[in-house]
Length: 461
Image (cartoon, rainbow, N blue to C red; front, top):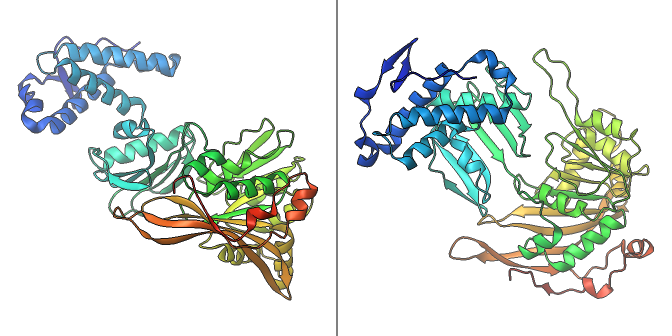
């Protein structure tokens, strides 16, 4: 158990306990110096707790038991300085020390805020968060660069990764499902750069996206029909445009009796089906060994008797294996890709297939793409932070050596409002889908009138 702290209120300086009554001023917090004073008191309290720990028994306690013991010690130490801190200040100080000891330090309040979707750290004293699609400066900071680096190393250590001068970049998934990416000096010139992508407690469904104005009911009906009819879907878009969110939403339409294998760099997908196998890539270790790539997992997934394969993001030579899987009995598969437009997505796909190292004529690659990819969905993060499905296109085949595709739905931006938020409308192009008969043969009936040329009304219009 942790040792009993000394009788007097002290702080650890070097290797000795020294009295700190002379340097603590009770009026500091009330006199406008609260932030610096609380930071100093927190550091002193943290040092006292560390010095009071009996390290021989730490391994015998569970995390909850250890946290309880640390809180008890912190409360006892704070009670002995009751003349310096009031009850609310003591509780806040104790919470901060516990966050420092077990959590993410200054980031804990941000991680507990459900309205925050992204946390972006630019050095120890600059932290931004994204709320409702907009970035704003957060009123939190780390003590110094060393403090930030310590928190980053603790976090990535908990997920089995490491970050130091020999391995200054790391990407991984936190225990709550959030995704963290960090890059530290010497690659980051002004201090560690950290981004944490957070996800809601409940995955958004297609109905939620319609309600939020990300797409219309007609678009949701068509995309859900494509998933149920086992068409292969490619979701393209930029970073933070909502590709993974849309992929999660569309995966809800996969029948519960099908076996689904998901493959990701850092697991973000949360499929609701009962029969899901989740695979995650692994980076190489310090010796440069042990790496498992997306391509390795795609090849292995083909031996796992999947009905569908869902790849979180296609970004390299695994594109060739993905196309082969879609063309060899694994229809209804889904993946995402970084691209600015649905036509650009096909160009990027061609380039990534070429990265596989095979000397294949371009017309052969395009023929593989034409037979594998049926529908491409473009997502975009518009001015003001709104995420929308800005285009739904279908690939209908080849004309000579060129791929042929048609736009079915699109979003037209007409301007921005006074808050710089994008304004516009959804519309249909008037083109009847090439795969409408296939949808009907699979028992998914969609009226032809759904695709008549017109402006569509979204839930947020």
